[in-house]
Length: 192
Ligand code: 5GP
Image (tube, rainbow, N blue to C red; front, side):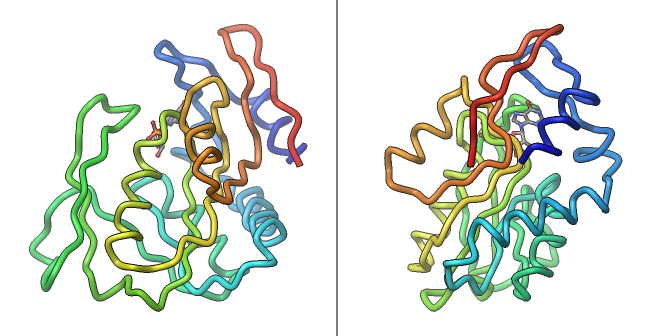
């Protein structure tokens, strides 16, 4: 997505630890008009799939998933990173290593919101090593639901998450794939 690449080049900052900071439009302040275009693009890329639910993980994925869901006219479920008294009934749980916080979280979701009848699109902001997406895929498998695709806003192509998902035959679409990045240069991989 050309406009996304341009926005990353203009506003993104590369931080130590291979972290791309895009908090001016995606991760802290959110540019809703722009994220609306992201939602439309996900709809275009997954138009051939019968999707009845969007799944993401808190926190950064939620806003993007909600705007995207309006184009699919489906609900969003987000996996939670901590136990809460509001979570009752049977739960799916898995562990996810956080890229940006360098710690492992228990990720939790109520079983009643994902069943074998669901056809799921996973949405997240970034793909790095694939831990977050793999945690969500584990939950989908445990539920017996069908994974229709994974939509990522920014994939860091020099990290292994994307390749591992594609090798498993997963229908992964990333709107921008960063090929390389340093403090003063950033390149993209050609994309559909
Ligand atoms: P993974 O689980 O694929 O290793 O990392 C993906 C998760 O870590 C995303 O949900 C995202 O929140 C966070 N993340 C990974 N790399 C970056 C990055 O370069 N910038 C930002 N802002 N978040 C990242």
